Image (tube, rainbow, N blue to C red; front, side, top):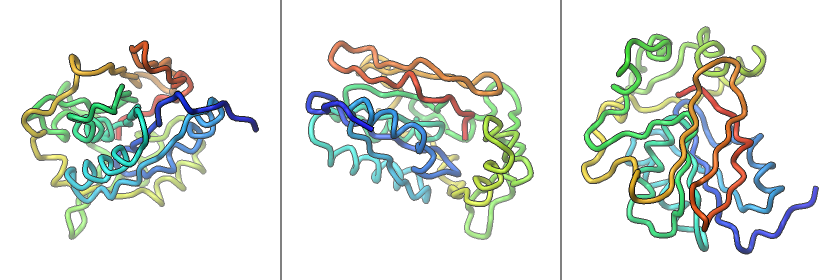
Length: 218
């Protein structure tokens, strides 16, 4: 496989959602690299929102030159906070992701417009307060666009998230950057998921994210 020169292109920082890790971008990374982009998938600990923001910020700060940050689901809230005040981040991309305003609670957004199937699929927190998705409901709620066999593997290897972080208000002074930098949103509104056109609205940044698949929020 040949790749294009990436000397004048931004680094792409991919941020996974809850109950997942960086390997969830395994089908996206080769496509971006083939087009000449440097791609880094963050491995967030999911131990707290603050820990995830700090980890993502560290990865963003380590890149040379401009950055496009891409967040899936819970990862959308993470990139919003991690990119705040960083002039090197030229665009944010939200893939079926949370984009909370200041003082909004991430967990409350799940049911803001009525009860969600996702909330009903959460198992009771474990002894340390970490949340999992009921394995019997994982395929239908999170991964309906993959085979049942693959969904079972995803359910067995899901990475739990600290429930306390979902109930904390989004920090003051940080919110979805409508007027700060280019941002694009991709919504998952039907099954099976489809390929979604996503491109940062900036003449300074071109990023072929039109081949990122939409995923349901997690």
